[in-house]
Amino acid sequence: MSRPIWLLDVDGVLNATRPGWSAAPRNGTAYGGGHPYRLRWAPALIDRIRALHDAGSVTLRWCTTWCADADQVERLFALPRLERAWTDPISHSAAPAVKLATARTVLDHGHRLIWTDDDAVPTSGPAHDQLVATGRALLIAPLPNRGLQPEHLDTIEAFLSDASVPHTGTDAPETDRRLLGDTA
Image 1 (cartoon, rainbow, N blue to C red):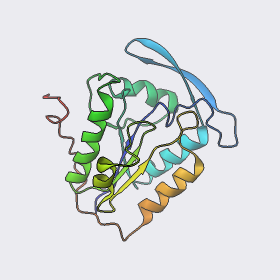
Image 2 (tube, one colour):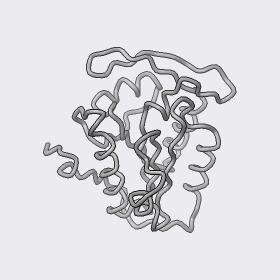
Image 3 (tube, rainbow, N blue to C red):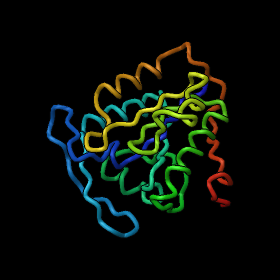
């Protein structure tokens, strides 16, 4: 049985101005494209994500403009090296289309999908309807100033444990680099 793939954005999902979680947030600096960026996150959120990863419940895959500098985010959040949806820098204007193509590729390869993104996840319309049509996708678009909240992680954990959701893929990484413009 294959693990679901969780496409994970950073800004507005993990990095939030008011993350909450009933504890003081942490702050730190990550470097993207050589520039310093101040990030703010809820340690309990990162702990829950790490626990799902460590348990083998889900394959975490960065799907963010941070992909080219994901090592900086991993260092700051004390996460292990995670898969990347792409490795070359992409612009903020190109990101929504590339992220949507990545989500479609995950589903096309038979995997269940969890996609958390504050601005690229379609919340209605044809793209949304197509992604959720089979019941194999969970789409979460958190408020960007709050990021993922405990109830979002509860929903993700319930989705992961739902045996009625079909699994049709394999655990082999299947990023279609040609689709994403990476020919390496």
